[in-house]
Image 1 (cartoon, rainbow, N blue to C red):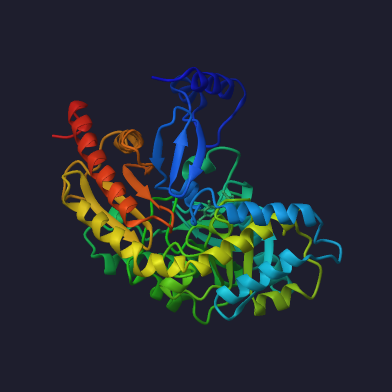
Image 2: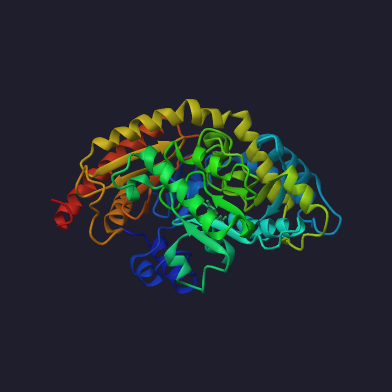
Length: 458
Ligand SMILES: *Cc1c(COP(=O)(O)O)cnc(C)c1O
């Protein structure tokens, strides 16, 4: 039963609020889930039902919900200095401290940070920055950025263009010129008869083929998420990143790691680049930088790139670049991550524990693959196990069904095509992990029943 309060919220939401990435008519007919409170790993809806937030909001609330320390840090900063700009020969203590802190957490050659309000703005900045960088070095023809199909780099004009999502390109006249999309290292979906190791090499060699076709003299950068998040938690085969490193070594092509999801501990290392042995020239950051408490992102660059960018004015910036209150939230978040050793906890304690239980879900008749690194994972649902080549009819139907059943079982998972994905908070307790695994298994059972009723599965 839906309370009057919820019915009222829904009616007003439907009347005035356009949601991102939503079919509004269908959503309004069904009614939005109204989330009113968060504490630790849990969120509560307007009817008092709680659910384990298996997605950390949108891959961001890494230290869990409702941390009073962040609220206190933000309140202090607002009272001290709520806003000042960093454009006109100005700076402020939270920006200084945060840039310095990020430089200590990243690989030694990464030294400088350009702040933005979000991950999309970070990637927009990347596009302008890498092209400007080559122009400054006297190579203005180096314009092309190589990305990958099914990548996600945000939703602004440049972010969505860098991304390889066809439905996004189809709206608004994208991609912008000079962006090329090549193979993704998605073995489960596209590996055919190859082993994961063979396919990792093949997917990397497609990037090499692109470089040869386009010509190094025309290429500014290669951008990639260490693990594709929104694309479906695509964890590349072990051979992929070393082969990419071999291909890019000695070539004048900047490596950009989009660390918006992987950054700040999601893999059990501070950055996905550290986990996979990537040596990026630039890194996009956001989400976990502030655990989503306030919007902030940035581009971290190497000292070599910073040196080139420092010679002349870079005509780029946002009113809220290095917003003092957002910087204060991020600093407090990083303090908590360090003080509570949460990144090590992902690597050594809760990560391995959840991974063991998650991989055990692979014995379920619906599950074609159960994969997880750190605290980011996916379940591939298939109609005809063990075949990877047979998909459910009407892609996405079973995934969405499973996602809705999961929420009914008290666990927020997200559906991508016909897979389920999770990225829970680093503060997840062992008991909560057990709850998550039990709810996931019940969801698989419920989905199997529903799929059989609908004739989608024998
Ligand atoms: C979420 C995301 C972005 C976009 O960040 P926003 O803050 O939503 O603009 C960019 N890249 C990756 C890998 C992301 O997951």
